[in-house]
Amino acid sequence: MTAATARRVAEEFAGLYGAAPDGVWAAPGRVNLIGEYTDFNDGFVLPLALPHTAVAAVSRRDDGVLRLHSEDLPGGIVRLDAAALVPGADLGWAAYPAGVVWALRQAGHPVGGADVHLASTVPTGAGLSSSAALEVVTALALDELYGLGLSRPELARFAQHAENAFVGVPCGVMDQMASACAVEGHALFLDTRDLSYRQVPFDLGAFGLRLLVVDTRVKHALGDGAYAERRAGCEAGARALGVAGLRDIPHAHLPAALDRLEDEAVRRYVRHVVSDNERVLRTIALLDSGEVRAVGPLLTEGHVSLRDDLRVSCRELDLAVEAANAAGALGARMTGGGFGGSAVVLTEASGADGVAAAVEKAFARDGLTAPGIFEALPSAGARRLRAVL
Ligand code: ADP
Ligand code: MG
Image 1: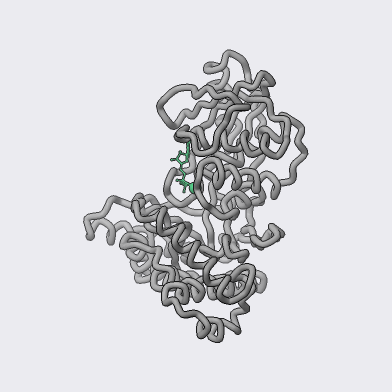
Image 2: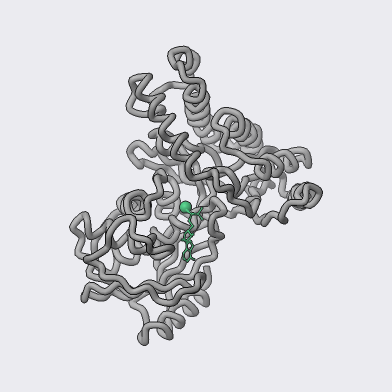
């Protein structure tokens, strides 16, 4: 994120609204290294922030008017009344930032209104959390402009609440926490039960390794309903086992827990969540002890579990993982909600170009749209940018 980007977005703001913004903020997208579909089971996740960010130039206004503009989408300025925001209203993309205003006001925070201009480099719908980046950058800007004094986890909770209750997407809290709390050069080991977290040093370059993201550029419609169904299945599993969340099933007790479940699908979901939670802990232990290459097989194990037990993968994701591993990657998995979106690949730095080329070749061979492949460098979480006009 360069000062030049901040200046450009501030200048665009001035062109749109007729005055310089009060400030410019940025919040990143994220990629999850491991721990998938665990965040609504009170479990563990290990995301890292990407260099791709949503940037917002924002001015406070206290007349109740909320004006929203995105340079990335057509449609001009959306003008709303902050006091009249209603969950579920058909606001399109504007529902994400408007939802944050709504969530803060619902909690009694004195957010009068704002002028907002957004520009984001987070690819949308690629499973890299462009939506959370948008929410978190809005939340941080409002927090600072209105002096709310909220902590990063509190900002993440408001952002998640906006997406759940205002936009109507039943996501967990991982994406918003990663965007709000990440630190450059680190992965975020997050306990989604109480939002406690630890910054885990993640300097793959020092080990001669690279983490690649493969954006399959597909999003299958099946995704939304399937997400809700998996979520309901996990909750049913927790109820049947008498625990508040599947996180409460220790991995050693998994066989006994599975014996107590009758529903075949619920059994698979429970097996995935409990084993993926364990894989996060094993990954952390490996990173802590510098055995970074040994993380690779855990990624692939996690993919197989998502593919066969949770059944949220798809042809393109499976192909990316198989082609990367066949070309010598240390391991790979789908990341995010699945049914398209992106995969992560851990590879020797020296073999990274060959792995990327092999994935591209496999997609071309199967007549699929060329994937977008880039390196996931662990980047900074949400922050204010310096922008001198
Ligand atoms: P993901 O978060 O995985 O990228 P989502 O479906 O959760 O996918 O969120 C994507 C939506 O977020 C877009 O359809 C759009 O409404 C909104 N969005 C993302 N980036 C922008 C942007 N730069 N400008 C306006 N809206 C955006
Ligand atoms: Mg999203």
